[in-house]
Image (cartoon, rainbow, N blue to C red; front, side, top):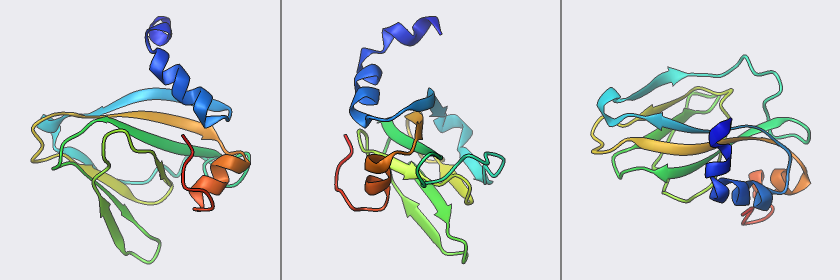
Length: 133
């Protein structure tokens, strides 16, 4: 889009990732909306952490201590995390997940990158290396 040139820091992040990317966008969950209900993005057949698949990466740009990301493992166990500003997360959106910003004082904004998994990205996802950026 026309605004792409207005985000040089995003360009730098994509260079540091060192992989092909597909969609790159800023996503907001308004504090006034309370969050996103439990859902799964199972329509994306190309999603996953194997080489050549699409991994959804999140970098929180703006958040607050009240914002929580929830995910459920296939056995029903829930995981709940606050994703700190500037951190990098792989989210397997094929599994149920939700976002709560009910008590937050500000909107949650994430840079969301759909990255084509290569060996360095896969090694990071599986914890074989500590840092990707």
